[in-house]
Image (cartoon, rainbow over all chains, first blue to last red; front, side, top):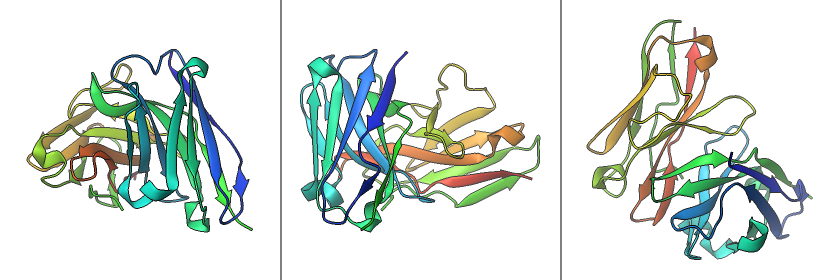
Amino acid sequence: QITLKESGPTLVKPTQTLTLTCTFSDFSLSTSGVGVGWIRQPPGKALEWLTVIYWDDDKRYTPSLRSRLTITKDTSKNQVVLTMTNMDPVDTATYYCAHVDTTVFQTFDYWGQGTLVTVSS
Amino acid sequence: QSVLTQPPSVSGAPGQRVTISCTGSSSNIGIGYDVHWFQQLPGTAPKLLIYGNNNRPSGVPDRFSGSKSGSSASLAITGLQAEDEAYYYCQSYDNNLSGYVFGTGTKVTVL
C-alpha cells in the first residue's frame, strides 16, 4: 500500500524559507514514469498544483511560483523535498504531497494527509 | 488561479442525481488531456474518485461516473447519499503551463 507523509514546520515567519519533506513507501522514484508532486490548499479555498519531480529528475513548476520553488529527490531515502522562499501570509495553506504514475494516467492517485503551514510574524 | 471552472455548489435530495461540470480550454481538456475527479471530505486529503475521464478506482461506488466532451467534462452522482456531501475537484494537464491544473471546486450538499 503506497503511503506518503509530509513533515516540516507548522509556523514560519514572513520572508523566511519553507522546507517540507515528503517521505513515502511502497514505490520507488527510480521507477520509470513515477513522480511525486506538491499541491497546496489555502483554508477554505481550492487545490493548487505547485510542482512535480519525476523518476528521471525532470521537474515542472507552476509558472506563477516558479521563481520561489525548488523540488529535489533523494531516491535512497524515499524522500522528496520542497523549498519555497520568501514566504508570505497568503502562502498559509495545507501542503500535500502525492504520487503520480505517468505510465497510467496524469493524476495523483495517492496523497499524504497534508500539513498545515501558517505564515505569521 | 484555477484554469478549470466548476460551479461553486450543487445540491440534491437523497436518491436524486446531480452533475458537476468542469470547463477547460484548448490547452488542456480540449486538446485531449484526460480529466480526473477528486472527492474531499471535511478535514481530509482529496481522494481520487474518477481517473481517465470515466474510470473508477477500486472501492468507488458505481453511483459515481464521469464523462468528457470537447473542452468540458462532467461528474455525475446518482442515488445521492448523505455521505456524498463533500467538495469535488476536477483535474487535468495543461500544455501552456506544462503542468497539472485543478478545478475551482464544487460543494455538493445533500438536502
